[in-house]
Image 1 (cartoon, rainbow, N blue to C red):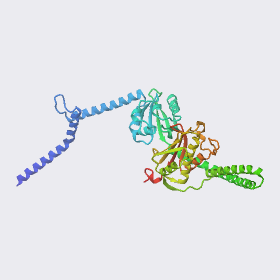
Image 2 (image 1 turned 180 degrees about the vertical axis):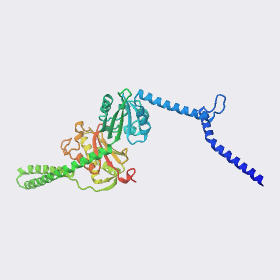
Image 3 (image 1 turned 90 degrees about the vertical axis):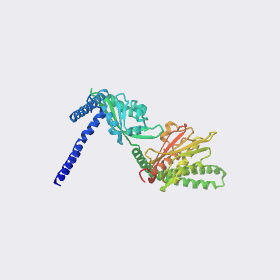
Image 4 (image 1 turned 90 degrees about the horizontal axis):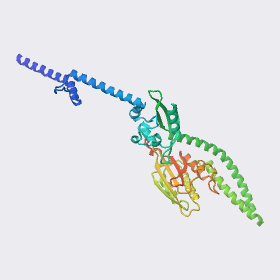
Length: 432
């Protein structure tokens, strides 16, 4: 019995030793297998290398890889001076919300991260090696900043530049540009950091416009009320004259009544602009409202509505009046034509998904370039007999709803009005 106990004990110890040896040799076996795959695990005769040899071979391989990496970095820096920046834009900056763009000394794109490609609406793969002017939309002042940076090594920070995208959208980019020195001490290229400031700038412009409209409205409303009272007095006397038996005063009295009534209508419109009624706040679909406007469009106007519009929050009656004014503006512009004025109303959401953009464009004569910046100024009418308040009311209504409106030339040669309205809160992404 004692002998059997000893035999079992020896066998148990042997098994434990075998397992321990297997556990100890596991890293070596893995190292050997990896070395065989890399082609450094066997000698010329096919025998497996010893652990010390494998470790030495691996250390030599790591040293070679490091040397190659350092040589590659040195070559890139000596060739363009932008090696580190190119790696940063291509790798580390891939997930940044800020756009990173690297230019060489010829102002061609050396690297850019996905955010920069999105802001410039450029193809990342096709952009590298091409001049910045070929891949970027028109950005006001950017070419001058790049030229000064590359020629003089002068940096610029916190610049806000206007950008015009190919589809006609306007935006603003916050740009910081810094020169990249080469080993020789001159400028090898430039690093551009870009941030989308479109929404922030829109909110700032909207706040300033609201403040200006409120100030003008308060002053103008008082003047308009006094003017309206004076017109009422004139109207009363004109009606008294019209009732007299003397036929010599009937004609002049009727002309006075006609002019006074026209002036009162203009004053009423101006009061609507200067001191509009408190808008109702409700959520409503925009497309049915636009189609209702299209059904009762002025004579001689054909309206086509397409796209996606979503829901907005505001006063539906005032917004409908604004679109009625735009359609009337198109009808007035096309007066005298033998064919109908065709008006297209197209809607789509912006890149942020929080704003709907509605484009109203026609094939009329368009707006002269010198008038584009003043089309929303009260009493700035482009046609005889116009009050110049229709488009001013459009702007006032859109601003009161938290949006913006601008005018430009349309793709068919006529006028285009681009209206942006914030979508209802529950319809905007990330607010459900």
